[in-house]
Image (cartoon, rainbow, N blue to C red; front, top):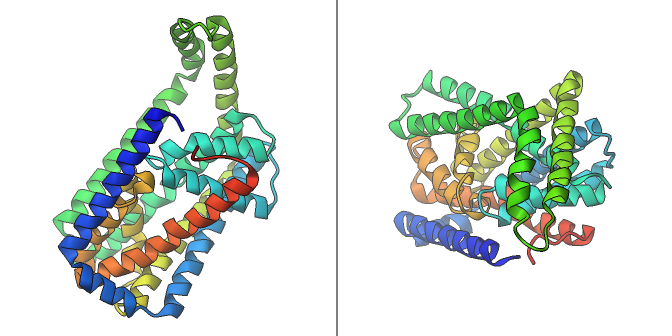
Length: 337
């Protein structure tokens, strides 16, 4: 890992630790520890199992996307590869944006595919996950609002999520609309700049980058044209989100405070907005966002909510970290160097 990357990781990890520390101080460390100590081990195990089901569902998403790109993987290999990709996302700042290059390298090595094909594969999974998440947010908030007044905190979170998603979708649409111009002009702009360094040849860089960009857009088009497969991929994404919502519901039951399953349906995807921060995998930010959203919507004590969130994040963050780290190492790809 190079100097700037190492500094970014250290700063991100430091920020995550600081956020978690502030959260614990505000809520009360002793009360959170007591709630965790009293948690039902069986239901904690159920939460972990649901977390694994989420990981399996999204690994099948990746397998289906790569199948559209003629990259074949077994179900087990796809699970290991996606776990490794999740590990990369969780240890790099800015979540998916930081981990996708590593995930693409992992896919290209295991699937014996071009790097840009691997990048299209993991990027497609991340982008397609937005569709059901937005649907769940509006469906969940709408159903919740039908029986309970929606607080300002939830309204702000929904507005922030919509604004961020709109910005991402607009950027993607703009780049896709002018993809020919991107392929034609970007290599010519970057090549001469890198060519100033003795070890780079401007013409070689321009040719190589143009080929990679062309292949990248061609692969995206291949994924989008198979409508039946695309529908199945989005359905797997929806299943994965529902498994995460079920895991959070189980986590609350584990700490002795059952809540309506409807609340996690919109709270979980909303909290992932905090993943678009310079924190490794959104660590600290997502926990704080979850607590901030669940306090006004559940009526449960903040200490019990924090304990439930920690159980939930253990299932969807730390467990995939362990599996993904071992997978990346076994598959021969270094995420941290």
